[in-house]
Length: 323
Image (cartoon, rainbow, N blue to C red):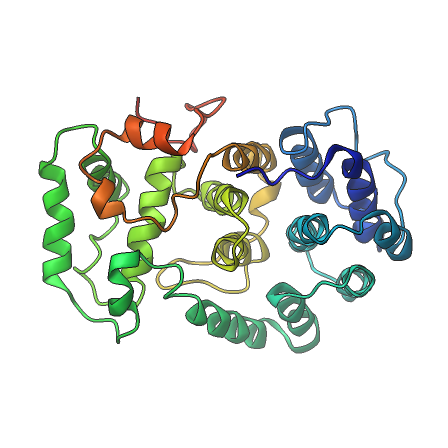
């Protein structure tokens, strides 16, 4: 489901985004790297360099970008770039708010980052946890959503059901999913008491089908891939969450420890740009389909069904693209 900004709006979008991060001493190296990767891979404009693109102010940007969908794209990229300034400053948050007012968008990220600057990381982390908890059911495996509405408990029956998927033929989605859990030392959902077990099933099945590894860089890339598949609140939050944990770094999830500045690591921005493009190229959203129903099918067939393209470099250390 393509989420490309219309070709005629790519340059106004990039120039507006440059304006939104031109604060303090100007855009950071990381902000420019991320914006360039998105411009090159998602918007297919390698000729448009954000480092030299003339910035536009909020009013000019709003006048140039009037389409609601394009404004939403602008917002999604802007909340990514906002988190790529370390440390996050009041001038950056205020500048983003100016663009938000002019373009008429709002979102969880605006409130979180204002809280982070004004009230500190503990309060922002508590707010994020509340937003995250509210999205657990929507981001859970469809057949397991009733479980997500209950208090997290041990569920040996679920764990046994998942482990049994490894008895399917090698190369099937189910076999690869269990192999993914084993190879990364992840507990089978249900073996440990967690409210997130139903979410973990959907999330890790998405890892397997997309072929993206659970590194810090890979988690952000997977969120971008998922958001690019379809324009839903659940998918957008699936991108915001790893950005908070691995880029902004002021809150963890479950047993996942927060880090910061992940997109500043070598290749991370490029991986995100490429993953956004791969997600946009899919033919349907597979994040919240019934993965248990698909489990007996060869993984290659599942990928073909949803139009999942092979990564440009499956051996880059951030992919698990079994053929």
